Image (tube, rainbow, N blue to C red; front, top):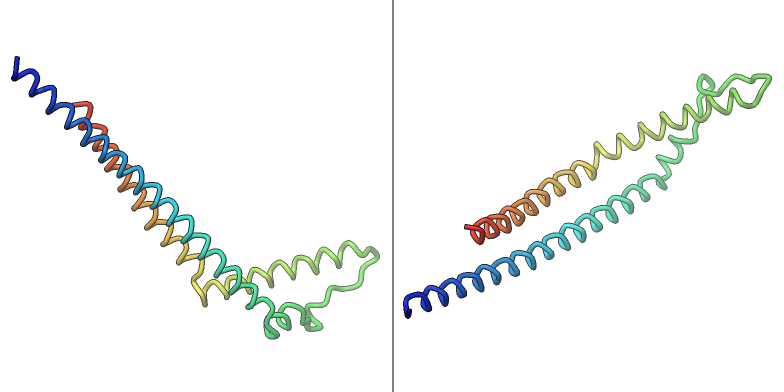
Length: 138
């Protein structure tokens, strides 16, 4: 009878230990998620500020708004055709400006790398949690 009682106490202690580890992992997982969110928010804020300053610079404004005679749309009977051509030129200019900014600053590439690292950390915590859950079933 004492042996069965001892086994019961050991089992109860193991269960309590496992529950404690699960709660610790859940807490760490929440911290990891919060750190990921804070990191991403910081990166977005820095990228927006940097890009905003870049787009407001005199050089970029001049590059965006200056037209050579070859670039000026031809006069048409309807305003819609030149307007459409102007919008097309603006889109291409903006794309070129943004591509150059990203090439110079690597903001989006750095954010992608940070997300990949965060995903790895998140997966690690999930794996630990699943490992503990699997042990409890055995």
